[in-house]
Structure formats: C-alpha cells, structure tokens
Image 1 (tube, rainbow, N blue to C red):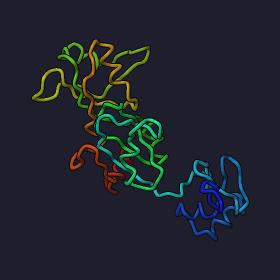
Image 2 (image 1 turned 60 degrees about the vertical axis):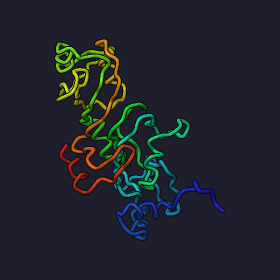
Image 3 (image 1 turned 90 degrees about the vertical axis):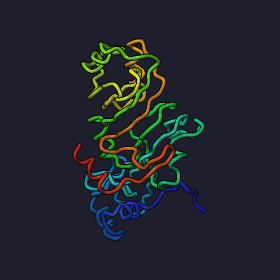
Length: 237
C-alpha cells in the first residue's frame, strides 16, 4: 500500500482542475505545455504532491475548486495554520471545506470579527498587493483626543514606517474611547502599533467588515461559504 503523500498522477491532477479530460491532459503533457516546479514534464505518470507548483501553458492550476470561507472569529483563537498553537481558526472551519484554504490577513489571538479564507492564489496575491479594506471597531483604555484622531487620519510614521488609514472616527452613540478605523494594511499588529505610538492601550479589536463582506447573519464562532455574488464583487476591487 502506497503512503498517502505519494501524490497523484499529473494527468489526473490536470483533469481535476477542470481544464480538460485526463486523455487530453496526456496530449498537453506530451507537447510540453505542462511544468511542475518550474520544469517541463513530459511523463504522464509523473506524481504531483501537495504544494507543487503545476502550470498549464504558464498559468498555475489547482485541482481544487476555488473556495471562499468567511469566519466570525471569537476571542482567544490563534490565526495560524500551525497545529501547535492550541485552538486555531483552522479548527473552527474544519467542517467548511476539504479544500486547502488559508487565512487572508491576520487577526490577533484576542481580536474578534471577520476573517477570510481561500485557496484562490490570484485573489490572495491581488489583496496582498493592493491591500484589503477592513473596518475595525476599536476600544481604547481612555478617550481618544481629537488631535490624535486627526494625526492618525493624516498618517503616522511608526517605528520608521509610514502608516496610512482610509478613515477614522468616533463610534456613534459610544464613549470617546471607541473608534472606527478603516485600513488596508494586512498585518495584525498595526492597530496596536498606531495607538501605542500615541500612548493608548488597546482593550478590544473587532473586524466589522472586509471589503463588501459584513457580519450580517454570521454569529461569533460561525462560518459561511461566500455566495457567487459575494465572490464576483472581489473582481471590482
């Protein structure tokens, strides 16, 4: 019996991606249109393993359909794919799909709110290059001074790096220690860096929206698969 990580035949991998039949894949392989990890492969029986970079006519292919999962992350869960970090976001979406999705961007362990997962490399690369607009509801240890709100709005230099935000304002009908911050930065420490730089401690961080996605009908700790309409809206970013 062969080990589980022995991989699958290249022609089957191509067929599973939906490009063509297995027989047609054999023809494409024979004519040199298929590469694995940067090298042209002409052997139909070549085995492909998870993580291999398989390209058809220069375009990377994936045997899994593109999958998009949205999680409303609870507090105390790590945003990581590592199995050694206790309870992780991957545990929470384990029943969502068999596709090898990964989180896009990060939320700190004690942060809550929306987190997007996908295996769509094209979208991930687009979001990392352009940034992903996220709206956060943030609670600080004390009221935020109007001058500091203005400074953040105009952009700050923190630890030698320029940090720009899309919008920042006080939260309506809430104490002045609560603000809404819209930012494209993908990291999970940027919010704490901004407010620590100005002398505030962050008490609570909640991601309210990601681009056009909201928490509507998505309770804390639950996930959902994105609809076709929600996926198509990413093409407009």
